[in-house]
Image 1: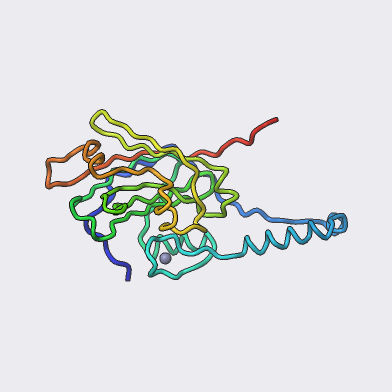
Image 2: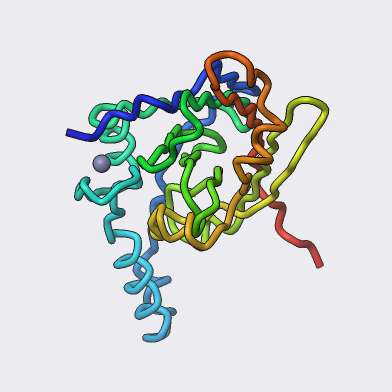
Length: 225
Ligand SMILES: [Zn+2]
């Protein structure tokens, strides 16, 4: 059983710009004649690539208690069925994170949602944690695939409220890197709790902290010579 997190929830997800493109598997095929033209080095490279492609991914759900591995399709089913992770369609999103008891961060407080766009899937993490002794929030995105393809995407995250705005632009990390590795490298939108209070849209009710975080994913165009 995964621990239930009671003091952080996501509110009013607003998926936009529906992207109905369907994930298609790339099938490698080569004629016998083409193979004959390949040098041994090329065949060796293809073998290495195929082996990497077959290497299963670890479940990207945070925490070390889940040991499930598999391909992306299998992990998507697993995340939805076994971890109750929500999937949102579209390359733009706007979420409101509600932290019911922001003064207490001693319990790990994390949220994961999935984003489906460009026929690919992304993990969007939001987490309250301590960086040394400073209470912080971090949001970042990871690509459900390998590093090479992850680098062809970019994303922005923006926290806004009360006339203030903070924007992060980044490159999604592959889920080959663990969630903890990415968090500890601070490769995302970092907000100290003090700063978060300035963005919070409702500080008066029940000491809740509400952060509106919106973002967008896009595919970088290849550089033309
Ligand atoms: Zn899992």
